[in-house]
Image (tube, rainbow, N blue to C red; front, side):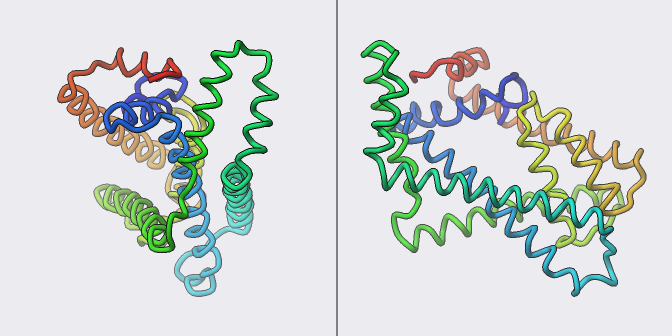
Length: 258
């Protein structure tokens, strides 16, 4: 996350699995597969929470007035999110259960490359497919789902406490659509989440809660700065402990072989 904040191209998404592969002595392709599964769980979990919020509208209609156009936009983004999540889930299941077909298709696409590169790509693809398996057992699947909810409800709790520090009292459950919007903004591949996060955060604060635009801007800038500062502080502590440098992490992210 620190690398993603500080360097362009979101290479932190590549640094994370390759760094984990080196540190834990596991196959890099395998860890890349688990990252894809992680993103699918993130999307489906937040879409579920947003769906629960929208379906529960009759229960809080008198306490929280949601503009029809805002509700429609949230519903549209939620549907798109579900489509993306289930689409990725379908791709994961296809790769896993139809491994031979996927490998043959990849071989056709990679045929113009030198044989050495084709063999290396084929090996990484097999490792990647192994990392896609999230259904080892029903018990493990329940744990994965529970941890995904714990992560996103924990993030919601962070924002709830942060807003209280500004004396902006928003009930915990009502923050769910805002968290969904910030997730959409953070997914836009800009350095340090700049732009996308700020737009969707301010949109949520003004359109969902009627917060003044100037205050919404201030809240967005400060909460982003707090996240960036704490992430980099912890990240630099880990980098220092591991005897690494930011340049080494950057080079790791720019290479395909750990």
